[in-house]
Length: 247
Length: 102
Image 1 (cartoon, chains in turn orange, purple):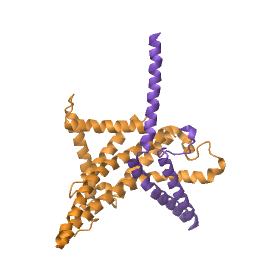
Image 2 (tube, rainbow over the protein chains, first blue to last red):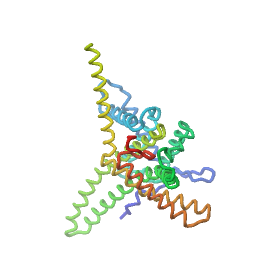
Image 3 (cartoon, rainbow over the protein chains, first blue to last red):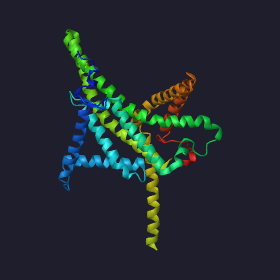
Image 4 (cartoon, each protein chain N blue to C red):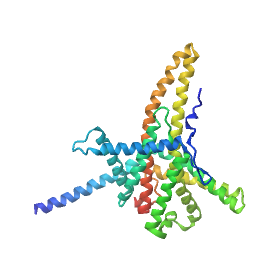
């Protein structure tokens, strides 16, 4: 019986060394490339025809575009349209990564904290740079807004700084933990089906229960895959909103 | 004269509609599924960051484990503070909010 966490092992496909750093091409990198190719193909094929009355694929593409566009507009506010391409790319990349992971024998690269933290760190650094470029020194009033009693400063400033640094951690941990937990749970229940089925006797009949659970979990995982991509990008929009408007 | 009245009426209606939209927006932030997925990691991340900052400062100024303890507590407070901000519909926006600012 395979262990339920075996599915997350990184396997090297092609070994590469760049000035002493291991930059091997792994199954995670393969699926990242597949995710990019998948989303590019999806958008290209969907927007190729440009029919006035969209077909199935075209309306899917249009829906995803409009969905992200309205999300950016509503959550990041005025002056955020320039960042739409980034948010859209991010959303499609994570969505395709999560959905590709639902295919049996494939690899879910969003279940690696290294991947999600890199994404979150890029967003965190980028948003901070945008805020400093836009507001200059005023950015630091972020951590101690006016209207707060000065006596609270020694307590409030560290708390605000910590809660600013919480952002990349909670952003990356949320996506990674959800994918990791979901896929592990599916594997555990699937393993239970086989274990009970091969045990014989009354247990054999009981194997139906985990089977039903697996079917339910698979549906739930599809929901989580889409929802986590959405949550990741909507929070990016909110951070952008703070950077552009400073409360 | 009639058209002027109509225009006034229209602008009033637009104002009302926009106000309604704002109300809808604040409600949207408190959508339960969204909240569930957002707040779960907030507390944990607060503790991780607090402990991380405390530990690093300790290594730097050689006061192990004093700053670790202080920042661990501050991290916990920051996590709860963020949680409160989400639950009161202020999103994850930074800063101190007066009720009248809403």
